[in-house]
Image 1 (spheres, rainbow, N blue to C red):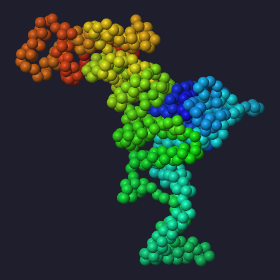
Image 2: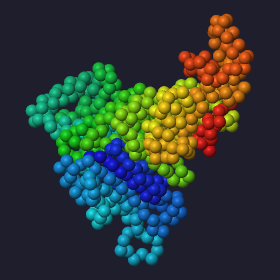
Image 3: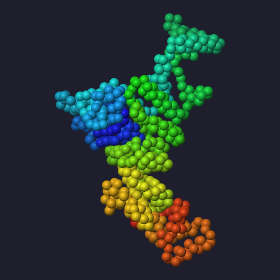
Image 4: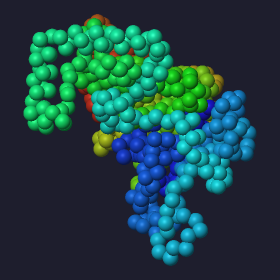
Length: 568
């Protein structure tokens, strides 16, 4: 089973949302972009633990674009989840039979609506109700039984893990202990009972314990009299083995047996997730549920970056036909280890939010794999950027900020310069388009590269692949130079040429070689294409030295146009 589509209408800042999913998802967005609202909307449809009162919304839950009294005007909140890939699973087919919709492949849809109650004669403001129905027929009401089979477990961002583990009702340890108690044989229970009675007897016979028990009983009897005596005892645990098994406690650090109260919040989060995994595994194995959906808000809380990567690489990549995970996060360490196809990006757009699904990018499996490795190596800077400048290599990445206008601050505008270490820009452009990130590409002109390999050829190929006009590459963000960036920089202005020669001479050269550089400069015949030969084997180091000595350079015209396209 796979969650394939999620739509929201009029709910909070999710005015109109239509997200293509590929099972689980990792949701990324700035503060107040609606990540928590998205998970809450999903819970309104699927979470069997939500009460009717929690599903009953108010005016404040409607989109602000609908005005201050949306309920008085009869507006409707509608949230739908579409599901596919279940046609070979008899259990899921039976579970979803009342939610099927027409089409191929087979799909099911569950819809939550908060709407004016129908068939009422109220002359005042409409009376609202919530319903959950299956398929296209709103009379096909879906009860809690189906939602129990499509099990949903939610972990809040500001969760109190220590409190949840200590609470019998909320603890993920509870089903484990209940199963232990349920499967223990009568012989096992008798043996445990004898051991408990022996342990309690040994403790009671300690002089201090015996005296304390007598003193407590005596003082309580003085207070309430013999008729109402409490008859207290000091024991390790009740001698009832079933009760004892259900009250087993979890300790950490092996033989040290440290209580959870002394554990770090990070350790408790890992333990909680492990117990949750075990709980769901047992529910699936026992066929108590047909599918499990875990939603987690900001799971990186209190976890060291390496633990974030290790924990969620395993969690998110273990999704299957029987289990899906949806996570919201600000952590580049988590995003860097997930399948990039699962990314969903939320972006603020005035009082509303726009959603973009990476799964809509038309990429081959090889391209997805390459992109995943790139995101891992760069800690997903491509995903978190508000704007992206794509360049060929490290030298261009270093030089980019020096070429911007003095009034342009890349950090202020959320610009990330990404070096792809090649000229294979197409897959990155497709990905950025899918996630709604503005971009510009700066690539070399390479006039001597040969037929089909120049910057102009490169731009035309990208245009054809994207369905754009090959004669207007700059209209869709692709800008190419005359030669290489270093050559174009040198030829742009005398200021650049002087700064670049000074940077070159600042390296340690033999006296003869340094004199040769100066003679070339003084001759007045040195061109950018000649200068590139001097730095060809040290372009990265040269770029670092140049920007350190001259933080502001005169940009070639195509670079200026690229930055204007990226930052209008």
